[in-house]
Image (tube, rainbow, N blue to C red; front, side, top):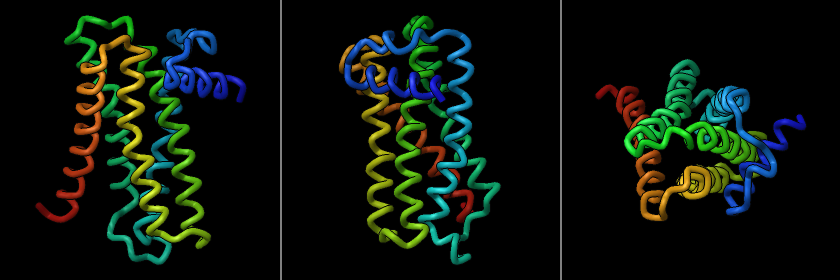
Amino acid sequence: MTYSLSMFRAALAALKSQDWREHSQVNRQDYARSYFALAASVPLYVFCFFSLTGAQSGASAFSLPLCVIVATLMALTFPLVAYLIVQLMSRMDVFKPWVTLRNWAVLALLIFMTCVCGLAYIGMLSTHIAGFMTLLAYLSTLLIDIRLAQTTADMDWTVSIFTGCTIAVASLLVLYASLLSISGY
C-alpha cells in the first residue's frame, strides 16, 4: 500500500510540474510493477463500461470477453505508442519513468471513474451525469499524457501536445474498431 501511495504521489508531482524524483526513483522493478497498475485498470474500464451501458438490467449488447479484450488493447496502446515516439526521438532513457508514472496516474483516474460509475450502478447518481463525468475523466487522460510528456519525458510544449493527441487518437481508434466489429462492419 505504501508503494502504491508513493507512486501516486510521484505521478501527482509530475502532473504538477514538481520534482517527481523526490517521491520515487523509477527503476526496472517500478517499471515492471507499473504494469500491475495497468492490469488493474482493465477491470475498472470494464466495470465503468458495463455500469453505463445497462448491463445490470441485461440490456447491454456487449459481452464480457469482448469488453476485456478491448479494455486490454486500449490500456496497452499507451506503452506501444510511447515506445514508438521515444524510438523516433532517440530518447529511450525517458521511456520507463514516463510509462511508469502514466500507468499510475491513469489508475488513479480510473479509480475516480469507477466510484462515479458505481454510484450510477447502485442508483445514487443518474446514468447521464455519470456518463458525462466519466467522459470528462476519460478525456482528461489527454491532459495527463501531455503533461507527463512534458515533465517526465522532457519534451517541448508542442511536441508534448502532438504526443498526447497521438496517444489519444490511437486509443480511440482501438475503441472505434471494436465498436465497428460489434456492429458487423
